[in-house]
Length: 566
Ligand SMILES: [Zn+2]
Image 1: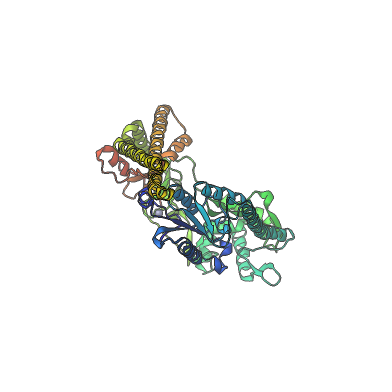
Image 2: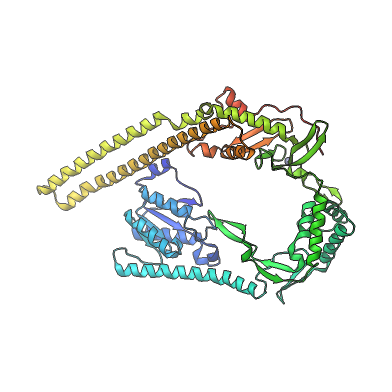
Protein backbone atom coordinates (compact mmCIF):
# COMPACT_ATOMS: atom_id res chain seq x y z
CA UNK A 1 0.00 0.00 0.00
CA UNK A 2 1.33 3.35 -1.02
CA UNK A 3 0.98 5.97 1.72
CA UNK A 4 1.12 9.67 0.87
CA UNK A 5 1.60 11.87 3.90
CA UNK A 6 0.89 15.57 4.09
CA UNK A 7 2.13 17.36 1.02
CA UNK A 8 3.49 14.27 -0.72
CA UNK A 9 2.16 14.00 -4.24
CA UNK A 10 2.47 11.53 -7.07
CA UNK A 11 4.23 12.83 -10.15
CA UNK A 12 2.63 12.59 -13.56
CA UNK A 13 5.05 9.78 -14.41
CA UNK A 14 4.04 7.86 -11.31
CA UNK A 15 0.38 8.39 -12.05
CA UNK A 16 0.72 7.13 -15.60
CA UNK A 17 2.61 4.14 -14.32
CA UNK A 18 -0.11 3.32 -11.80
CA UNK A 19 -3.11 3.70 -14.06
CA UNK A 20 -5.04 0.45 -14.11
CA UNK A 21 -3.21 -0.85 -11.05
CA UNK A 22 -5.02 1.05 -8.30
CA UNK A 23 -8.49 0.10 -7.11
CA UNK A 24 -9.02 2.16 -3.98
CA UNK A 25 -7.96 5.40 -2.37
CA UNK A 26 -8.13 5.74 1.39
CA UNK A 27 -8.42 9.19 2.93
CA UNK A 28 -7.56 9.81 6.60
CA UNK A 29 -7.60 12.96 8.68
CA UNK A 30 -7.21 13.93 12.32
CA UNK A 31 -8.10 17.40 13.49
CA UNK A 32 -6.63 18.90 16.64
CA UNK A 33 -9.86 18.54 18.61
CA UNK A 34 -10.03 14.82 17.77
CA UNK A 35 -6.57 13.98 18.96
CA UNK A 36 -7.75 12.71 22.32
CA UNK A 37 -10.19 10.29 20.76
CA UNK A 38 -8.29 7.11 20.05
CA UNK A 39 -10.82 5.76 17.59
CA UNK A 40 -9.81 8.55 15.25
CA UNK A 41 -6.07 7.92 15.06
CA UNK A 42 -4.63 7.95 11.54
CA UNK A 43 -3.34 4.39 11.94
CA UNK A 44 -6.72 3.00 12.96
CA UNK A 45 -8.51 4.92 10.21
CA UNK A 46 -6.21 3.47 7.56
CA UNK A 47 -6.29 -0.01 9.07
CA UNK A 48 -10.08 -0.17 9.10
CA UNK A 49 -10.41 1.25 5.59
CA UNK A 50 -7.81 -1.15 4.27
CA UNK A 51 -9.56 -4.14 5.88
CA UNK A 52 -12.82 -3.07 4.25
CA UNK A 53 -11.16 -2.79 0.83
CA UNK A 54 -9.75 -6.27 1.16
CA UNK A 55 -12.71 -8.06 2.78
CA UNK A 56 -15.61 -6.41 0.96
CA UNK A 57 -14.13 -5.73 -2.47
CA UNK A 58 -11.36 -8.33 -2.63
CA UNK A 59 -8.69 -5.75 -3.44
CA UNK A 60 -5.03 -6.45 -2.82
CA UNK A 61 -3.01 -4.25 -0.54
CA UNK A 62 -0.84 -3.23 -3.49
CA UNK A 63 -3.94 -1.85 -5.23
CA UNK A 64 -4.56 0.74 -2.51
CA UNK A 65 -3.21 4.24 -1.98
CA UNK A 66 -3.74 5.95 1.39
CA UNK A 67 -3.65 9.73 1.64
CA UNK A 68 -3.09 11.38 5.01
CA UNK A 69 -4.08 14.98 5.54
CA UNK A 70 -1.33 17.02 7.21
CA UNK A 71 -2.03 18.01 10.78
CA UNK A 72 -3.19 21.45 11.80
CA UNK A 73 -5.34 21.94 8.73
CA UNK A 74 -8.42 22.45 10.86
CA UNK A 75 -11.46 22.51 8.65
CA UNK A 76 -9.82 24.52 5.93
CA UNK A 77 -11.52 23.56 2.66
CA UNK A 78 -8.20 23.82 0.86
CA UNK A 79 -6.67 20.56 1.99
CA UNK A 80 -3.65 19.26 0.12
CA UNK A 81 -4.30 15.53 0.63
CA UNK A 82 -8.00 15.75 -0.25
CA UNK A 83 -7.22 17.85 -3.31
CA UNK A 84 -4.60 15.37 -4.43
CA UNK A 85 -6.99 12.46 -3.85
CA UNK A 86 -9.57 14.15 -6.10
CA UNK A 87 -6.87 14.75 -8.67
CA UNK A 88 -5.81 11.09 -8.62
CA UNK A 89 -9.41 9.92 -8.96
CA UNK A 90 -9.82 12.26 -11.90
CA UNK A 91 -6.75 10.72 -13.50
CA UNK A 92 -8.31 7.29 -13.15
CA UNK A 93 -6.62 5.96 -10.03
CA UNK A 94 -9.17 4.14 -7.90
CA UNK A 95 -12.75 3.00 -8.27
CA UNK A 96 -13.54 3.32 -4.56
CA UNK A 97 -12.88 6.20 -2.24
CA UNK A 98 -12.78 4.82 1.29
CA UNK A 99 -13.13 6.99 4.40
CA UNK A 100 -13.87 6.06 8.02
CA UNK A 101 -16.76 8.47 8.50
CA UNK A 102 -18.24 11.46 6.63
CA UNK A 103 -16.83 13.83 9.27
CA UNK A 104 -13.31 12.74 8.30
CA UNK A 105 -14.06 14.01 4.82
CA UNK A 106 -15.29 17.35 6.12
CA UNK A 107 -17.40 18.85 8.85
CA UNK A 108 -18.83 21.39 6.46
CA UNK A 109 -22.18 20.33 5.03
CA UNK A 110 -21.82 22.29 1.80
CA UNK A 111 -18.32 21.01 1.23
CA UNK A 112 -19.49 17.46 1.94
CA UNK A 113 -22.06 17.82 -0.84
CA UNK A 114 -19.61 19.36 -3.29
CA UNK A 115 -16.85 16.83 -2.69
CA UNK A 116 -19.18 13.83 -2.74
CA UNK A 117 -20.90 14.88 -5.93
CA UNK A 118 -17.57 15.44 -7.59
CA UNK A 119 -16.42 11.95 -6.67
CA UNK A 120 -19.66 10.29 -7.74
CA UNK A 121 -19.57 12.33 -10.92
CA UNK A 122 -16.30 10.61 -11.82
CA UNK A 123 -18.01 7.25 -11.52
CA UNK A 124 -16.23 6.50 -8.26
CA UNK A 125 -18.03 5.01 -5.24
CA UNK A 126 -17.62 6.46 -1.78
CA UNK A 127 -17.37 3.86 0.94
CA UNK A 128 -17.68 4.99 4.55
CA UNK A 129 -16.79 2.42 7.19
CA UNK A 130 -19.18 3.88 9.74
CA UNK A 131 -21.87 5.24 7.45
CA UNK A 132 -23.79 3.98 4.49
CA UNK A 133 -24.70 6.22 1.61
CA UNK A 134 -26.21 5.50 -1.76
CA UNK A 135 -26.33 8.49 -4.11
CA UNK A 136 -29.21 6.91 -6.04
CA UNK A 137 -31.42 6.51 -2.99
CA UNK A 138 -33.11 9.77 -1.94
CA UNK A 139 -33.68 8.54 1.60
CA UNK A 140 -30.05 7.63 1.99
CA UNK A 141 -29.03 11.02 0.63
CA UNK A 142 -31.32 12.72 3.12
CA UNK A 143 -29.58 10.87 5.95
CA UNK A 144 -26.23 11.81 4.50
CA UNK A 145 -27.16 15.51 4.42
CA UNK A 146 -28.52 15.38 7.94
CA UNK A 147 -25.26 13.82 9.10
CA UNK A 148 -23.37 16.66 7.38
CA UNK A 149 -25.53 19.29 9.08
CA UNK A 150 -25.03 17.71 12.48
CA UNK A 151 -21.26 17.63 11.99
CA UNK A 152 -21.29 21.27 10.96
CA UNK A 153 -23.45 22.19 13.93
CA UNK A 154 -21.13 20.37 16.32
CA UNK A 155 -18.10 22.08 14.86
CA UNK A 156 -19.73 25.50 15.14
CA UNK A 157 -20.79 24.80 18.71
CA UNK A 158 -17.30 23.81 19.82
CA UNK A 159 -15.89 26.90 18.17
CA UNK A 160 -18.46 29.30 19.64
CA UNK A 161 -18.13 27.80 23.09
CA UNK A 162 -14.47 28.44 23.20
CA UNK A 163 -14.28 31.80 21.43
CA UNK A 164 -17.51 33.30 22.70
CA UNK A 165 -16.81 31.90 26.13
CA UNK A 166 -13.45 33.61 26.25
CA UNK A 167 -14.86 36.95 25.15
CA UNK A 168 -17.77 36.76 27.58
CA UNK A 169 -15.29 36.14 30.36
CA UNK A 170 -13.11 39.04 29.27
CA UNK A 171 -16.12 41.37 29.12
CA UNK A 172 -16.91 40.57 32.72
CA UNK A 173 -13.38 41.69 33.57
CA UNK A 174 -12.17 38.15 34.10
CA UNK A 175 -9.12 36.59 32.55
CA UNK A 176 -9.76 33.97 29.90
CA UNK A 177 -6.01 33.58 29.67
CA UNK A 178 -3.12 35.58 30.95
CA UNK A 179 0.06 35.55 28.97
CA UNK A 180 3.20 35.97 30.98
CA UNK A 181 3.70 39.63 31.76
CA UNK A 182 6.92 40.61 33.50
CA UNK A 183 6.14 41.92 36.97
CA UNK A 184 3.08 39.75 37.51
CA UNK A 185 2.08 36.23 38.37
CA UNK A 186 -1.32 34.68 37.90
CA UNK A 187 -3.18 33.44 40.93
CA UNK A 188 -5.04 30.34 39.78
CA UNK A 189 -7.30 30.36 42.86
CA UNK A 190 -8.64 33.89 42.46
CA UNK A 191 -8.14 33.87 38.68
CA UNK A 192 -6.45 37.26 38.98
CA UNK A 193 -2.98 38.54 38.24
CA UNK A 194 -0.92 39.67 41.23
CA UNK A 195 2.39 41.42 41.55
CA UNK A 196 5.49 39.33 41.34
CA UNK A 197 7.25 41.35 44.01
CA UNK A 198 10.80 40.65 42.83
CA UNK A 199 10.04 41.57 39.24
CA UNK A 200 7.97 44.54 40.33
CA UNK A 201 10.99 45.88 42.20
CA UNK A 202 13.13 45.53 39.07
CA UNK A 203 10.55 47.35 36.96
CA UNK A 204 10.29 50.23 39.41
CA UNK A 205 14.05 50.45 39.49
CA UNK A 206 14.26 50.47 35.70
CA UNK A 207 11.85 53.39 35.69
CA UNK A 208 13.98 55.25 38.28
CA UNK A 209 17.16 54.58 36.33
CA UNK A 210 15.57 56.16 33.29
CA UNK A 211 13.74 59.09 34.86
CA UNK A 212 15.88 59.95 37.88
CA UNK A 213 19.34 58.61 37.15
CA UNK A 214 19.06 59.76 33.53
CA UNK A 215 20.32 56.43 32.24
CA UNK A 216 19.62 55.35 28.68
CA UNK A 217 17.81 52.11 27.93
CA UNK A 218 21.13 50.76 26.71
CA UNK A 219 22.82 51.60 30.01
CA UNK A 220 19.92 50.05 31.92
CA UNK A 221 20.23 46.81 29.94
CA UNK A 222 23.94 46.71 30.66
CA UNK A 223 23.50 47.45 34.37
CA UNK A 224 20.81 44.79 34.87
CA UNK A 225 22.92 42.17 33.13
CA UNK A 226 25.97 43.18 35.19
CA UNK A 227 23.99 42.50 38.34
CA UNK A 228 22.89 39.13 37.07
CA UNK A 229 19.18 40.01 36.99
CA UNK A 230 17.29 37.45 34.91
CA UNK A 231 16.03 38.85 31.61
CA UNK A 232 12.36 38.26 30.67
CA UNK A 233 13.38 35.97 27.81
CA UNK A 234 16.59 34.11 28.28
CA UNK A 235 19.96 35.30 29.40
CA UNK A 236 20.45 38.46 27.44
CA UNK A 237 19.22 41.91 28.31
CA UNK A 238 18.68 43.85 25.11
CA UNK A 239 18.41 47.60 24.88
CA UNK A 240 15.27 47.08 22.79
CA UNK A 241 13.74 44.86 25.50
CA UNK A 242 14.23 47.54 28.14
CA UNK A 243 12.74 50.19 25.92
CA UNK A 244 9.75 48.04 25.02
CA UNK A 245 9.06 47.03 28.63
CA UNK A 246 9.15 50.59 29.90
CA UNK A 247 6.65 51.69 27.27
CA UNK A 248 4.22 48.81 27.79
CA UNK A 249 0.74 50.17 28.39
CA UNK A 250 -0.17 47.16 30.55
CA UNK A 251 1.93 48.63 33.37
CA UNK A 252 -0.51 51.54 33.81
CA UNK A 253 -3.09 48.95 34.89
CA UNK A 254 -4.92 48.95 31.57
CA UNK A 255 -4.55 45.46 30.27
CA UNK A 256 -6.14 44.82 26.91
CA UNK A 257 -7.41 41.40 26.00
CA UNK A 258 -7.59 40.36 22.36
CA UNK A 259 -4.86 42.59 20.94
CA UNK A 260 -4.02 39.81 18.53
CA UNK A 261 -5.79 36.77 17.26
CA UNK A 262 -4.84 33.51 15.64
CA UNK A 263 -6.02 33.04 12.08
CA UNK A 264 -5.43 30.37 9.51
CA UNK A 265 -3.58 31.52 6.44
CA UNK A 266 -3.14 28.83 3.82
CA UNK A 267 -3.73 26.26 6.50
CA UNK A 268 -1.05 27.64 8.78
CA UNK A 269 -1.84 29.30 12.05
CA UNK A 270 -0.61 32.82 12.36
CA UNK A 271 -0.93 35.50 15.01
CA UNK A 272 -2.16 38.82 13.66
CA UNK A 273 -2.94 42.13 15.39
CA UNK A 274 -6.60 43.06 15.77
CA UNK A 275 -8.38 46.38 15.41
CA UNK A 276 -8.47 48.47 18.52
CA UNK A 277 -12.26 48.28 18.73
CA UNK A 278 -11.93 44.53 19.31
CA UNK A 279 -9.79 44.98 22.40
CA UNK A 280 -11.36 44.44 25.79
CA UNK A 281 -10.04 46.43 28.72
CA UNK A 282 -9.38 44.57 31.93
CA UNK A 283 -8.01 46.41 34.96
CA UNK A 284 -4.94 44.99 36.64
CA UNK A 285 -2.85 46.37 39.54
CA UNK A 286 -0.70 49.14 38.02
CA UNK A 287 3.10 49.52 38.18
CA UNK A 288 2.87 53.26 37.63
CA UNK A 289 0.29 55.78 36.49
CA UNK A 290 -0.38 57.10 33.01
CA UNK A 291 1.45 60.38 33.61
CA UNK A 292 4.59 58.40 34.48
CA UNK A 293 4.29 56.44 31.26
CA UNK A 294 4.08 59.71 29.34
CA UNK A 295 7.30 60.85 31.03
CA UNK A 296 8.97 57.55 30.16
CA UNK A 297 8.02 57.88 26.51
CA UNK A 298 9.23 61.50 26.43
CA UNK A 299 12.56 60.56 27.96
CA UNK A 300 13.13 57.62 25.63
CA UNK A 301 12.31 59.87 22.69
CA UNK A 302 14.77 62.55 23.76
CA UNK A 303 17.48 59.93 24.35
CA UNK A 304 16.89 58.75 20.85
CA UNK A 305 17.36 62.21 19.35
CA UNK A 306 20.72 62.92 17.84
CA UNK A 307 21.42 59.24 17.45
CA UNK A 308 21.64 57.75 14.01
CA UNK A 309 18.25 56.85 12.79
CA UNK A 310 17.13 54.15 10.43
CA UNK A 311 16.82 55.54 6.97
CA UNK A 312 14.24 54.67 4.39
CA UNK A 313 16.42 55.68 1.49
CA UNK A 314 18.05 52.42 0.73
CA UNK A 315 17.55 50.18 -2.20
CA UNK A 316 18.01 46.75 -0.69
CA UNK A 317 15.48 47.16 2.10
CA UNK A 318 14.39 43.73 3.33
CA UNK A 319 16.67 42.19 0.74
CA UNK A 320 20.16 42.76 2.10
CA UNK A 321 21.48 39.84 4.14
CA UNK A 322 24.65 39.44 6.15
CA UNK A 323 27.19 37.17 4.50
CA UNK A 324 28.61 36.19 7.89
CA UNK A 325 25.49 34.97 9.67
CA UNK A 326 22.73 35.16 7.05
CA UNK A 327 20.75 37.58 9.21
CA UNK A 328 18.92 40.61 7.92
CA UNK A 329 20.80 43.84 7.35
CA UNK A 330 19.25 47.16 8.22
CA UNK A 331 20.55 50.56 7.41
CA UNK A 332 20.95 52.65 10.49
CA UNK A 333 24.58 53.23 11.13
CA UNK A 334 26.04 56.46 9.92
CA UNK A 335 29.50 57.86 10.09
CA UNK A 336 30.67 61.39 9.54
CA UNK A 337 33.79 61.86 7.49
CA UNK A 338 35.36 64.86 5.80
CA UNK A 339 33.59 64.00 2.58
CA UNK A 340 30.17 63.68 4.17
CA UNK A 341 27.86 61.46 6.17
CA UNK A 342 27.69 57.84 5.14
CA UNK A 343 25.04 55.27 5.81
CA UNK A 344 25.86 51.63 6.18
CA UNK A 345 24.14 48.32 5.76
CA UNK A 346 24.69 46.59 9.03
CA UNK A 347 23.78 43.14 10.28
CA UNK A 348 20.95 43.31 12.82
CA UNK A 349 22.63 40.63 14.92
CA UNK A 350 25.61 42.93 15.12
CA UNK A 351 23.72 46.14 15.93
CA UNK A 352 21.37 44.63 18.53
CA UNK A 353 22.59 45.82 21.90
CA UNK A 354 22.45 42.83 24.20
CA UNK A 355 24.29 42.27 27.47
CA UNK A 356 25.18 39.30 29.64
CA UNK A 357 26.92 39.84 32.97
CA UNK A 358 27.53 43.44 32.03
CA UNK A 359 29.37 42.50 28.86
CA UNK A 360 28.14 43.10 25.37
CA UNK A 361 27.01 39.95 23.62
CA UNK A 362 28.34 39.79 20.11
CA UNK A 363 26.89 37.15 17.84
CA UNK A 364 28.04 38.60 14.55
CA UNK A 365 31.23 40.53 14.14
CA UNK A 366 32.66 42.22 11.10
CA UNK A 367 32.26 45.09 8.75
CA UNK A 368 29.36 47.22 7.59
CA UNK A 369 28.73 48.01 3.96
CA UNK A 370 28.33 51.52 2.65
CA UNK A 371 24.80 52.01 1.36
CA UNK A 372 25.66 54.42 -1.44
CA UNK A 373 28.30 52.13 -2.96
CA UNK A 374 26.31 48.91 -2.61
CA UNK A 375 23.13 50.46 -4.01
CA UNK A 376 24.93 52.06 -6.90
CA UNK A 377 26.80 48.96 -7.98
CA UNK A 378 23.80 46.74 -7.52
CA UNK A 379 21.48 49.01 -9.49
CA UNK A 380 23.93 49.37 -12.35
CA UNK A 381 24.32 45.64 -12.52
CA UNK A 382 20.58 45.11 -12.37
CA UNK A 383 19.92 47.60 -15.14
CA UNK A 384 22.51 45.97 -17.33
CA UNK A 385 20.80 42.63 -16.90
CA UNK A 386 17.37 44.12 -17.56
CA UNK A 387 18.45 45.88 -20.71
CA UNK A 388 19.10 42.52 -22.30
CA UNK A 389 16.11 40.56 -21.19
CA UNK A 390 16.65 37.95 -23.89
CA UNK A 391 20.05 37.09 -22.47
CA UNK A 392 18.62 37.17 -19.04
CA UNK A 393 15.81 34.81 -19.91
CA UNK A 394 17.74 32.72 -22.36
CA UNK A 395 18.01 29.49 -20.44
CA UNK A 396 14.48 29.94 -19.23
CA UNK A 397 13.21 30.30 -22.78
CA UNK A 398 15.12 27.25 -23.93
CA UNK A 399 13.62 25.16 -21.23
CA UNK A 400 10.01 26.18 -21.63
CA UNK A 401 9.73 26.42 -25.39
CA UNK A 402 11.13 22.95 -25.70
CA UNK A 403 9.53 22.27 -29.05
CA UNK A 404 10.93 18.77 -29.17
CA UNK A 405 9.17 17.81 -25.98
CA UNK A 406 5.92 19.33 -27.19
CA UNK A 407 6.19 17.46 -30.50
CA UNK A 408 6.80 14.21 -28.67
CA UNK A 409 3.75 14.72 -26.53
CA UNK A 410 1.60 15.58 -29.52
CA UNK A 411 2.85 12.48 -31.35
CA UNK A 412 1.95 10.38 -28.34
CA UNK A 413 -1.57 11.80 -28.33
CA UNK A 414 -2.17 10.96 -31.96
CA UNK A 415 -0.77 7.48 -31.40
CA UNK A 416 -3.16 6.98 -28.50
CA UNK A 417 -6.06 8.30 -30.52
CA UNK A 418 -5.26 5.76 -33.19
CA UNK A 419 -5.31 3.00 -30.58
CA UNK A 420 -8.66 4.27 -29.40
CA UNK A 421 -10.06 4.02 -32.92
CA UNK A 422 -8.78 0.49 -33.26
CA UNK A 423 -10.41 -0.48 -29.99
CA UNK A 424 -13.68 1.11 -31.09
CA UNK A 425 -13.55 -0.87 -34.31
CA UNK A 426 -12.88 -4.06 -32.43
CA UNK A 427 -15.79 -3.40 -30.09
CA UNK A 428 -17.98 -2.56 -33.09
CA UNK A 429 -17.16 -5.97 -34.55
CA UNK A 430 -18.37 -7.69 -31.41
CA UNK A 431 -21.50 -5.59 -31.49
CA UNK A 432 -22.16 -6.84 -35.01
CA UNK A 433 -21.50 -10.43 -33.96
CA UNK A 434 -23.82 -9.99 -31.01
CA UNK A 435 -26.44 -8.35 -33.20
CA UNK A 436 -26.32 -11.25 -35.62
CA UNK A 437 -26.80 -13.63 -32.72
CA UNK A 438 -23.40 -15.20 -33.24
CA UNK A 439 -22.36 -14.55 -29.64
CA UNK A 440 -24.34 -14.34 -26.42
CA UNK A 441 -24.58 -11.32 -24.24
CA UNK A 442 -22.30 -12.86 -21.60
CA UNK A 443 -19.75 -13.61 -24.28
CA UNK A 444 -20.06 -10.10 -25.64
CA UNK A 445 -19.44 -8.68 -22.18
CA UNK A 446 -16.47 -10.93 -21.68
CA UNK A 447 -14.94 -9.86 -24.96
CA UNK A 448 -15.72 -6.18 -24.85
CA UNK A 449 -15.11 -5.40 -21.19
CA UNK A 450 -11.29 -5.55 -21.28
CA UNK A 451 -11.39 -3.41 -24.38
CA UNK A 452 -13.58 -0.85 -22.66
CA UNK A 453 -11.20 -0.82 -19.73
CA UNK A 454 -8.28 -0.36 -22.05
CA UNK A 455 -10.14 2.53 -23.65
CA UNK A 456 -10.60 4.15 -20.26
CA UNK A 457 -6.90 3.99 -19.58
CA UNK A 458 -5.98 5.43 -22.93
CA UNK A 459 -8.48 8.24 -22.53
CA UNK A 460 -6.97 9.02 -19.18
CA UNK A 461 -3.50 9.14 -20.60
CA UNK A 462 -4.66 11.51 -23.31
CA UNK A 463 -6.20 13.74 -20.66
CA UNK A 464 -2.96 13.81 -18.73
CA UNK A 465 -0.86 14.66 -21.77
CA UNK A 466 -3.31 17.35 -22.79
CA UNK A 467 -3.01 18.91 -19.37
CA UNK A 468 0.77 18.83 -19.77
CA UNK A 469 0.43 20.57 -23.11
CA UNK A 470 -1.88 23.13 -21.55
CA UNK A 471 0.65 23.75 -18.78
CA UNK A 472 3.27 24.32 -21.44
CA UNK A 473 1.03 26.85 -23.10
CA UNK A 474 0.68 28.66 -19.79
CA UNK A 475 4.44 28.89 -19.41
CA UNK A 476 4.70 30.26 -22.89
CA UNK A 477 2.14 32.95 -22.07
CA UNK A 478 3.89 33.77 -18.82
CA UNK A 479 7.17 34.15 -20.64
CA UNK A 480 5.61 36.61 -23.06
CA UNK A 481 4.18 38.61 -20.19
CA UNK A 482 7.53 38.66 -18.48
CA UNK A 483 9.32 39.87 -21.59
CA UNK A 484 6.77 42.63 -22.00
CA UNK A 485 7.15 43.63 -18.40
CA UNK A 486 10.90 43.79 -18.64
CA UNK A 487 10.90 45.76 -21.85
CA UNK A 488 8.50 48.38 -20.47
CA UNK A 489 10.73 48.50 -17.44
CA UNK A 490 13.80 49.09 -19.61
CA UNK A 491 12.03 51.99 -21.27
CA UNK A 492 11.03 53.41 -17.96
CA UNK A 493 14.45 53.33 -16.36
CA UNK A 494 15.77 55.61 -19.05
CA UNK A 495 13.91 58.24 -17.10
CA UNK A 496 14.60 59.03 -13.49
CA UNK A 497 12.61 56.85 -11.15
CA UNK A 498 12.19 57.04 -7.42
CA UNK A 499 13.75 54.62 -5.00
CA UNK A 500 10.30 53.23 -4.19
CA UNK A 501 9.76 52.45 -7.86
CA UNK A 502 13.13 50.81 -8.04
CA UNK A 503 12.34 48.68 -5.04
CA UNK A 504 9.03 47.73 -6.59
CA UNK A 505 10.83 46.30 -9.61
CA UNK A 506 13.42 44.57 -7.46
CA UNK A 507 10.64 42.96 -5.49
CA UNK A 508 9.45 41.32 -8.63
CA UNK A 509 12.77 39.73 -9.48
CA UNK A 510 15.08 39.56 -6.50
CA UNK A 511 14.76 37.35 -3.47
CA UNK A 512 17.80 38.51 -1.54
CA UNK A 513 21.23 40.06 -1.85
CA UNK A 514 23.90 38.79 0.48
CA UNK A 515 26.76 41.11 1.36
CA UNK A 516 30.14 39.61 2.19
CA UNK A 517 33.11 40.86 4.16
CA UNK A 518 35.39 40.55 1.13
CA UNK A 519 33.24 43.10 -0.68
CA UNK A 520 31.27 41.00 -3.07
CA UNK A 521 27.57 40.30 -3.09
CA UNK A 522 25.52 37.36 -4.17
CA UNK A 523 22.10 37.73 -5.67
CA UNK A 524 19.30 35.21 -5.47
CA UNK A 525 16.53 35.61 -7.99
CA UNK A 526 12.95 34.93 -7.23
CA UNK A 527 13.26 32.00 -9.57
CA UNK A 528 9.79 30.80 -8.68
CA UNK A 529 8.41 33.79 -10.56
CA UNK A 530 10.53 32.93 -13.52
CA UNK A 531 10.33 29.18 -13.58
CA UNK A 532 7.51 26.76 -13.37
CA UNK A 533 8.18 23.82 -11.13
CA UNK A 534 9.23 21.50 -13.93
CA UNK A 535 11.64 23.85 -15.56
CA UNK A 536 13.89 24.97 -12.84
CA UNK A 537 16.45 27.21 -14.44
CA UNK A 538 19.61 27.14 -12.47
CA UNK A 539 20.33 30.83 -12.42
CA UNK A 540 22.54 30.51 -9.42
CA UNK A 541 24.79 27.63 -10.35
CA UNK A 542 24.32 27.96 -14.07
CA UNK A 543 26.99 26.32 -16.16
CA UNK A 544 25.91 28.23 -19.23
CA UNK A 545 29.02 30.32 -19.11
CA UNK A 546 29.09 33.80 -20.49
CA UNK A 547 29.10 37.05 -18.68
CA UNK A 548 25.64 36.79 -17.34
CA UNK A 549 25.92 33.65 -15.28
CA UNK A 550 29.13 34.88 -13.76
CA UNK A 551 28.04 38.39 -13.15
CA UNK A 552 24.90 37.48 -11.30
CA UNK A 553 26.58 35.04 -8.98
CA UNK A 554 29.41 37.29 -8.05
CA UNK A 555 28.88 40.95 -8.54
CA UNK A 556 31.69 43.33 -9.17
CA UNK A 557 33.86 43.27 -6.16
CA UNK A 558 33.16 46.33 -4.19
CA UNK A 559 36.40 47.88 -3.12
CA UNK A 560 37.43 50.97 -1.25
CA UNK A 561 34.93 51.09 1.51
CA UNK A 562 34.82 53.91 3.94
CA UNK A 563 36.28 53.23 7.33
CA UNK A 564 34.77 50.49 9.38
CA UNK A 565 32.35 51.52 12.03
CA UNK A 566 32.02 49.80 15.32
ZN1 LIG B 1 25.53 38.94 10.68
